[in-house]
Image 1 (cartoon, rainbow, N blue to C red):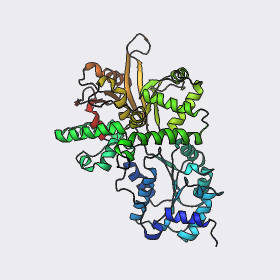
Image 2 (cartoon, one colour):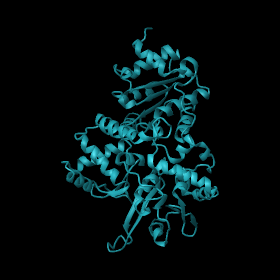
Image 3 (spheres, rainbow, N blue to C red):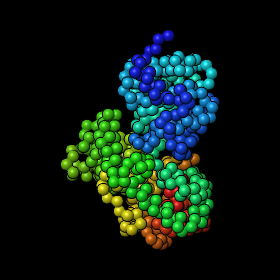
Image 4 (cartoon, rainbow, N blue to C red):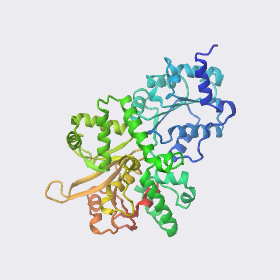
Length: 488
């Protein structure tokens, strides 16, 4: 049967799937596997069909590398190389034909797999940057409805990928989010000697059960010189953030800020988001992002952002600012934390805490990085909170913040605050307070104590500059910033 693809498209597919020839993945991915990638490879490798995995993440965090690592694990675990198909839809050649996915899959089954998709072990089909394929969700739905295949999708646009999956593939989608690298992941990948001396990592869910105290005790047993090395590494991570090329050596030390500005400002804000969404004012989108960068991890309302932008010379309104915030969150450039307990109806007038996902972006754009350990600690709170929020994510978890009157019925009573409140799906609560002063006193935990009394949370965490203690009676644990970041 003649091929339905052009010769050049066939050649590109063979190049992308080099393992069909000799069982080797090329380019060979790095040996380090992020925990999310390890879990993803395990699920995809299970002997079952009609699985759809969605991997969401911003530009340049290693999504394509993660796919190659999944493929390597599949082949290493015994999958036939011909049962794995990888397609990159950021290549115009592979998406320009009508019904491109169906044509490619038919060619693959006939020419490479040499048996129908219904026969033998399920095929694993990996679709990179799938949101760039026209009507991608209909194409994928047809594929998984018709054949017992396992499909893995990636895309820079979380909303497009997630929405398409929900509408067309309801009940069959598992989503993995790949944010920039955490501090621990940076050490594990590029400074393994430092990472190997750490206690085993835990998850954020484990903190609800008190396991962070055990981690903290293990961390405190490290020698002073080891802790000093970790602090020095944290200073670099704090300045540059978690984009892998800033740590791998691919980007020169004196060009890292230029790389981030080009990746985010020129590519994401200037091209990716306007290509995906109706951005009538690209300059406004950039100005809004800059405004958030200047006020990292602070509580702000959409109305106040609108006023600031209008003062800056932009003619805009709150609905437009709200839409643009949504686009920035969709591109995984910012996170929005709502006040706990959640109001029955969201309002633009109710302030939210808005944080950049990666602190290195803020430092690169503003060309200003106050020293983590030598700057005035009272001014470092929002920046340290930006570091802390990077750990506050996980399946079936939501993160908020708390700010209310001590007596909600008395608006003259003192305001009590907690920087973050992690909520489990069963309603369990984990309040986390950031206090980066050199010394803590009783007043520094009053917000946590109030939250415990009001909502009955079982444990609270204070992330500090260098203080470490455990108070079982008050159900509170204090630990230094580097200890907290390295636990996960």
